[in-house]
Length: 364
Ligand code: NAD
Ligand code: DAU
Image (spheres, rainbow, N blue to C red):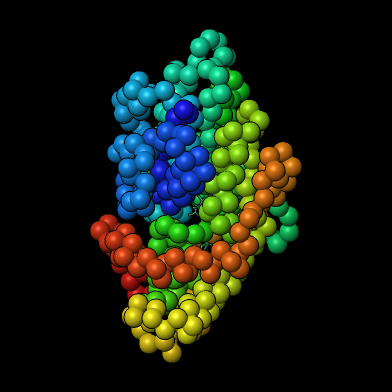
């Protein structure tokens, strides 16, 4: 039975990955989830899985914790989701991003290397480390072109600079020590358990509450959206079939301007309310007030990347990956999930996040 160490497994993508893997491999794998449970990590995300995984509350930066995991468990795979992930927060407090995203990754690499190495440049059979990275390391595109794996790294925010640094350290381990790793660079994910500070869940939450919908700048920035389950499928493929040392871009050719996303969500919420009137009990506003007039163009994000667009040719051709969920279906499923899981939204949007939310959006 293979054992996976999933760091950051209580966050958005990590918790979806845990569900994906349990569902796909059923009882035939052992999952160890290690998470610091920051404001973004919630055990409620793993409520139905907690009896099927080993959960460790821990920090990837902490050498003793990580050493203890490797001493106690025969780890075959590490999937590193653990990170500070929100660009706006990185602009406010870059240092935490450097600590977790860079030093935490290096700590995982070093301790796993020591445990997996059996001779110079030789490692235990079929062990693998996947660094879950992002298209943001490539920087920003204008209207034309796509990021390929050969696009030069040009991060432009503290978040993306920290992720790019981590990628370079992983690559240094691959080159120097022949360390068995891959890097995946995915575009924007959406789906269930997405923390409501990110665009899509924030807009769903605000629409239901009749609050204004903050759109940065003129709303024409473009993101390339992928349903989270398709990202999980890509990581599973890379773990088991990826060529040693290779970088894989992951994206579904689904570019949308932010303003389009906001309008689409308003329309979908409204449709649900009309077609299933029982949902109207969720509304903290009148149905007639759910319209485009809620949109507010607010001060732009500093250094706001204009456009991301992934070329996923390598993962498609080499590993046979393709995005299964069409955006038109995925976004309806996602809005429905939020309508059905208002307790989750209330639960995660409290505490530290609440203070942050009030500070960020006061006066908008
Ligand atoms: P998230 O913020 O929802 O989850 C991050 C998780 O990491 C949380 O559970 C948090 O508690 C945990 N964590 C933070 N610091 C930690 C530490 N020091 N030690 C242990 N755990 C820690 O983020 P997400 O959106 O799920 O992203 C997961 C990974 O995927 C990140 O590495 C991110 O850079 C990458 N990524 C995200 C997207 C996206 O669209 N969300 C796209 C591409 C890549
Ligand atoms: O591209 C992958 C990246 O996608 C991941 O690496 C990051 O971890 C993840 O957070 C995400 O980064 P973005 O900055 O693209 O996501 P966010 O949801 O914060 O913003 C999406 C777009 O929407 C971006 O252009 C900024 C804009 N925006 C965001 C918020 C929160 C708004 O216009 N208003 C908002 O209130």
